[in-house]
Image (cartoon, rainbow, N blue to C red; front, side, top):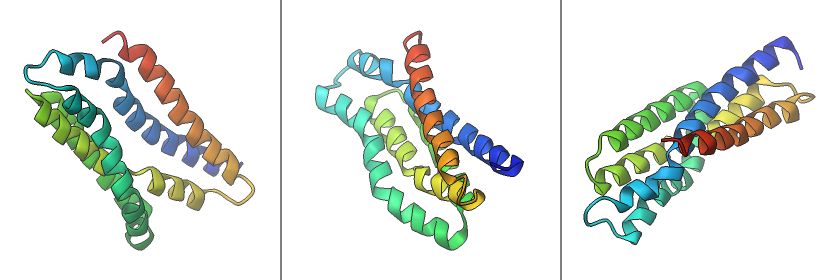
Length: 153
């Protein structure tokens, strides 16, 4: 890999890793905290945990197509802004409805496809697998660190 490819891969991995770390950090305690809220049912807990994935699933392909038309970086920036706004809404929520809304908005900021496409754009054919490995490894590391640190919340 060239220095530029390494720098690009690490910068993108940092962005993706921090986003995933922020997402995964609350998972060990979210269900426990939601159980303590008045009127929260197991269905609502499941919705709060799973709604992120619904937004992610529904918008992954459309955001990927959008990134083909307007560029990767604008879509990634928009996705990160939506994720940050959703995180703020969920963090400030006083009830499960606000948490569900925030997590749904987080999911709409799904930039995995655009991030991987940008990584492919910035790497040569000979180093593309290594760059994708760096991104994938960063997601795994973010998950591991978030589970270890999230349990201390």
